Amino acid sequence: VSSRTVSFRHVILGLLSQQPMSGYDIKHFLKNLDWLVGSFSFGSIYPALHALLTDSLVTVDVIYHQDKPPKKIYSITEAGKQVLREWIGQPAVPSASLKAFLMRLMLASNFSHAGLIAYLEQRRSQVKVQHTALEQVTEDQDETTDLGQRLALDYGLAVANAEVAWLDRTLERLSEQPLPMEVTQGNDTTPTV
Amino acid sequence: VSSRTVSFRHVILGLLSQQPMSGYDIKHFLKNLDWLVGSFSFGSIYPALHALLTDSLVTVDVIYHQDKPPKKIYSITEAGKQVLREWIGQPAVPSASLKAFLMRLMLASNFSHAGLIAYLEQRRSQVKVQHTALEQVTEDQDETTDLGQRLALDYGLAVANAEVAWLDRTLERLSEQPLPMEVTQGNDTTPTV
DNA sequence: ATGTGCATGTAACTGGTTACATGATTCG
DNA sequence: CGAATCATGTAACCAGTTACATGCACAT
Image 1: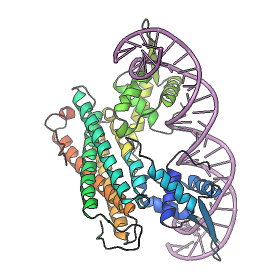
Image 2: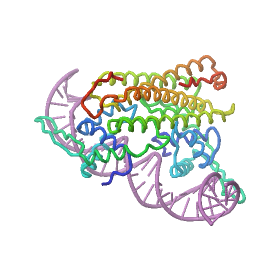
Image 3: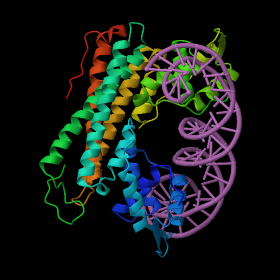
Image 4: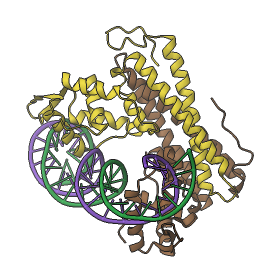
């Protein structure tokens, strides 16, 4: 069982936990979200899938179409789900990038409702810390400070504000209606986001 | 001249173009901005510096303190400035991440005023494209879509909106006053939430 | 005919991290 | 006395990219 380090393997696992997919499917799914979470090349997807296979965290079903190349549909196993859950369980690194945060967020169905809220709250406090840190740096500027740095700092503050605002809004929404979409059951009464 | 690929070397070069620094200084400078542009470990900074040296894009001055380890202050050379200018000259990749965008922005003093404005405008249109793309994906959701994905999408839209708002504000400011040095003065925007 | 989409894979490379080694000084 | 800060460096490792190889179907 070799996949100890991080993330991207888990993202694949997370996608597969939502529905079985082929490597090709994964690529396309991620392409839409490139800007948010980044996409990956086939050169990393296929090997990752093979590794997950040998670790028995996923299984394959090969589907032969006539006149089309066969498709390998990967599905997550119980062991895979377990690994995912464990990963979700451990706390997020402080000062994780937006990307890293969103990657994990995308696996929300593997969080408990309480876990999800905790995760968002965690993020909120981290962003606030970053925000004050940036404000600090901004204050330390003198007139000689490079324009680009000032702009970057200002940009950072703006994004941080937007993040906090979104998190506040969303947390409120999630606690108002404690069962956001009955994630694990089959029951949806919830108006869309 | 071997540093063709990208970024991080250029960031170092950019920092050195603002003022001479040691590897240690660079690390610390970047640490403050970790959240914005990411920081780098010594294991990549020192080798990078050595590489820049052998390419004659920087020079060193060793300063010996008594009783303190000697400090190696790196300064950018004319050749280094040239490389930077060339890098700045070429257009930004579409759909660059926030980080990549900010990295370049931090080197604004190496842009011309017009170049800077063009760069921000480029970013604005790119973010708008991403925004519409995300809206598209959002529409394509059905009720079975994973909660995490919806949240991530929503988050992305919020950030994109914030980016565009900031860019609009800033572009207006920059074109109002063609000599930008006063940026930080009247402008404590931070509309906290 | 040429290119694009479907579909899978491998090999070489590379940018960066982690961990290690060294060593003096100052703070608690 | 141990920990942190200053300060530089190397070597092993690793995740992910690029480029390559293959091959059929469908549209222009």
